[in-house]
Length: 222
Ligand code: HEC
Ligand code: HEC
Ligand code: HEC
Ligand code: HEC
Ligand code: HEC
Image (cartoon, rainbow, N blue to C red; front, side, top):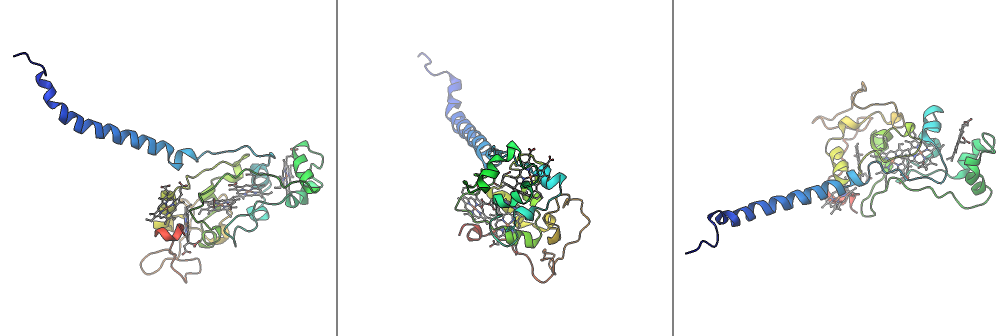
């Protein structure tokens, strides 16, 4: 009798059973990897309507972040400054600069400047700046070296696993709260010993309360 199916085809069912799921898993993995926030958000650098430079203002001129983002320590949101704040200086400094024409128009009663958001969590995730700053997490831990950026770029993934990595072990990321806007502070090299409780868990700077960043779902999805 003619051989219709050569002998090697006997392994086909096994091969299909083994190879298909493996290939499938690889495809899913690749998609997951590339489309997870780490690769869609890090490096996001939208063009802004006015060429405002943090490198110049916060870096070279050494302005404190809170001069402009003045709600960051007491509110969920770090306010984006109104044009009045800019005009404190630019009424006089570079008063005729073409690059500041939108700021002047806005100040003279025009529309607010429409800055493009860089960092943005989805609505279903809750974030508040204030408790992070009072616990001693610095701006550059989450936003990178803003003082070196001419155009703000997203430096960290802001993904759920990124939040949780710190929440499960915040100690190494903490500094004295008065240093949160110090962009030269490097938590890896700084000579700073954090207050810890009897079990070794990090405490607030006054050493009265153990920090408990939430890792339960309801902590961030309210
Ligand atoms: C002179 C005012 C001023 C100072 C000082 C300043 N900023 Fe800003 N910041 C702005 C303005 C205006 C924007 C919106 C335009 C932009 O994104 O560049 C902004 C945007 C940002 C954003 C992006 C916001 C978003 O859309 O996600 C971050 C993060 C930020 N600033 C952090 C800092 C940090 C950290 C410092 C201190 C090292 C600082 N800023 C100092 C004016 C200022
Ligand atoms: C623990 C991480 C973390 C720290 C520390 C932090 N930020 Fe943010 N920041 C975020 C996240 C996350 C967002 C996006 C929030 C959202 O979409 O709800 C954000 C958004 C912003 C924005 C846009 C406006 C807003 O509030 O949504 C500005 C401006 C800003 N941060 C400035 C600062 C400055 C200045 C500091 C230091 C004084 C700082 N941030 C410290 C994580 C952080
Ligand atoms: C504390 C004073 C001060 C504040 C507040 C300030 N600036 Fe400036 N800004 C300066 C100085 C100083 C320069 C550099 C001028 C020079 O190059 O001689 C400058 C330069 C600029 C330039 C470049 C202008 C050019 O023609 O090269 C832009 C754009 C600008 N600032 C935007 C802003 C915006 C937007 C704000 C508000 C969010 C702001 N500045 C707030 C002091 C300030
Ligand atoms: C580098 C460390 C770090 C990162 C990154 C971080 N957190 Fe936190 N988080 C903390 C610390 C420290 C506390 C303070 C806990 C306390 O005061 O007991 C905290 C507290 C919180 C709280 C409880 C306080 C409140 O506002 O109700 C929430 C919610 C929270 N974080 C959400 C987030 C989210 C969402 C992200 C990611 C987008 C994030 N955190 C990223 C360290 C971090
Ligand atoms: C420390 C804060 C934090 C905690 C705790 C947390 N999440 Fe999230 N979660 C986030 C943030 C931030 C995002 C949005 C991430 C992004 O932009 O992709 C998110 C996104 C999600 C998403 C959307 C899909 C995804 O992966 O992006 C789901 C589903 C989710 N969380 C479920 C949970 C569940 C279930 C728990 C409890 C086991 C939980 N989360 C605990 C911060 C948190």
